[in-house]
Every structure is written in C-alpha cells, then in structure tokens.
Image (cartoon, rainbow, N blue to C red; front, side):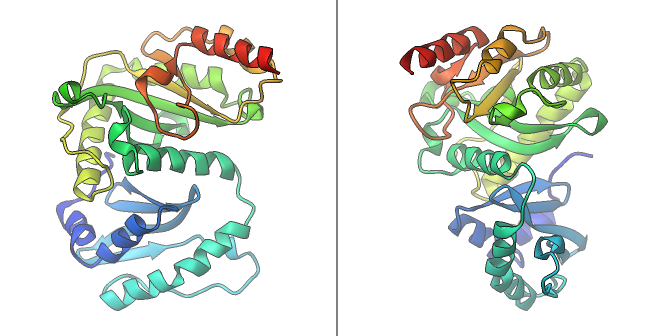
Length: 302
C-alpha cells in the first residue's frame, strides 16, 4: 500500500496534538522522522525510537521496542489521546535513547550513516545546495527486499530547479568491505533493482508515491526546498551505490565494480563526497569506471 499520511494525521503533526513530536525532531538533529502508511517512524541513530500510528481519528498508538531494555525495568507509557500523553512520551525520550545507545544493534553503523545522509541532504546546513533530496528510506520491494534510499536528483542550479522535476534515484548503502559480498551484496542489489524497474507500472506508482511523500515532508518542514516537486523526469533512474568506509588496502571492491551485472533499467553511479560529509553533489557521482580509477589512485598514495 502507498505510504503517506491522511489529512487529519498530517494536520495533527503540523499544528495539532502531535506537533510537539515534530518540534522535538526539528530541534534534535539526532532524530529523523519518516512517513509510512498513516504512520510515522522517528529514528534515532538509525534505529526506530518511536512509531506513531493512527488508531482512530485523533487517537494514536505510540510504540517503542521494549526489548531494548533487556532484562531491566521497562517503562509503561500511554496511548496518545491528549497533550498530557504527548508530554509523558517526550519526557521518556532520554531514557529510551539511552536504552538504544547501550543495546547491541545489528547493522547499527550502516543505519546511522543512512540517517546522516537524510539529514545532510534534506534539512542540514547545506541541504539547499546539494543536488539530491531523500524522499524515503527502507522502501519495500519484491520478495521482502528493501531499497535503502529513494531520492530525487534535482540539481541546485536555479534554472534547473525551477523546472520542478527531477530524476528518480534508488540508493544502496554498504558500510565497510564485509558488506559487499553478502547475500544482499552489491551484485545482488543491482539485479534486484533492475528486476523491480523492469515493471513500468511499479515505476509509475513509485514516482507518484515519492512525489506525495516529498510534498508532505516539505509541508512539515522536513525538507529544505522552496519548490514543489511536480514530477519525475523520463530519464533512466540512477542506481546509486553509497559505499561507506571502504579500506583502500582491500582489493575486493575494485573486483566487484569491474564485474557488476548488466543494468538494463538504471544507470549505475558511485557516490563520493566533496571532501568530507554526506552531502550528495552531482559532480561527485562517479561511473563504476571512474570509481575504479579513483580507488587505484588511493592505492598509489599509500
């Protein structure tokens, strides 16, 4: 089912009962709010800190995974019906965050980098100057697989951004070299994405869904952009590989880049940073061949 919030839910977040949650997310840059189907997830360091889901009109369930507390004492927190319930949840956030800090989470580093990419490109200090906005993360596709990042490449050049349309981007994030060869490694991801993009009806539906999510995020001031995204272009999508913390001593990445499967439905790009940071800029997106050459240069510097 398409992701997005109904009008009442969106209004409650923007100016109503749920607004204090939104205000906290905007004030605390360690948090990230993502839109689901009449539900929002508030992530902390890449983990799901709080899920707000509509139960009935003006009544919401707020949930936190109590397993983070292990065998320790677990708090009892209310359903969200009135401002006092919201206050109680907000007062509990430091304790909930602490539980997540000390709990051993699988893929925690990768998920935290994912959240930092959202921050730097959507609402960070330089967000309006980057060439990409992140529409969604952890987007489900066929057979239980997920796309780490769904974005729009929308150059910050005023004359281009004025056109209010951009290129669809599907991003895969890998943290460290051990993640490159797993069952869900680089080659498998290229095949999975191309299999998904081979169905034009899915591509059309995905684009429409991401336009709606972009609009709702912008309405909530979770995207720093002064233009509406009205459409995606007809360009081939960009399959963007975001490879964090590669060790230049390792040889496996160049081997994998040379042997990437054929990508019939998307152009493959490799994200590199403009010096340091997670802002995504079009000139720093490399072809696999350019990435291989850059990796070779790193080797000569050692």
